[in-house]
Length: 295
Image (cartoon, rainbow, N blue to C red; front, side):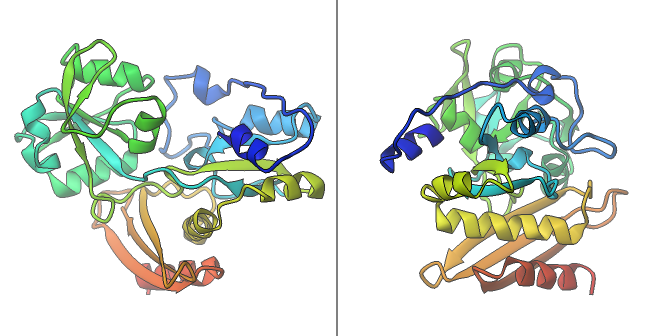
């Protein structure tokens, strides 16, 4: 996707793509989003390649990028954002008709995300939430084929990029089984910061490379993800608190509105906040969210 965007700018020269497997790609047993987890498991090897000079730019799913970057690196561009919603997939298609509300009490919902787990428990405390491992096809088969779980929740962007048809009320799993499908309202079931965004990371000193990738930067997406990441930083670097964020532009893109939910790690009440401001002033929006969360 990034290569195609670069080529569309008329860039002269050869663009070489190198696939680098990260620790997060190889270690499907790793627990992410919990205290003590290494937040750089999906980018560490790519940053090492940047420092070694073997690549000029690294392409990430922004959701995998920690809120605080080493000063040696910089994010310089995002592609137009994909849909940001989470998707509920159920073994019984009838259990997805009205989203989480259709699942019977006691149904087992599998997720590896602490944020999703907290949101599920908030909306449907009668459901049983358990952990799941594996890539997207594996997770889908654990619901649709083996019946190990009654449901799971995945990112809409990831499913679409893998070619799954999400246009109806069902989804066909890799094994051919039909599962229920419901796209969750992002204003209620708030996504992770950066969900659906593809970002380019470079060495911070490489101004020429920054200029090249600046040509493909989608300004609307950039402003939104800057506000979302500013909010994560204001909460605290290395913060493991589950956080949901929904951002939207208005006034012809000049202003931003950001909604958030923050869950207490010790099981206390969730806290919510909504703030708006100039799209080019993400830190101010983040500080207002913080003032509401911790007055």
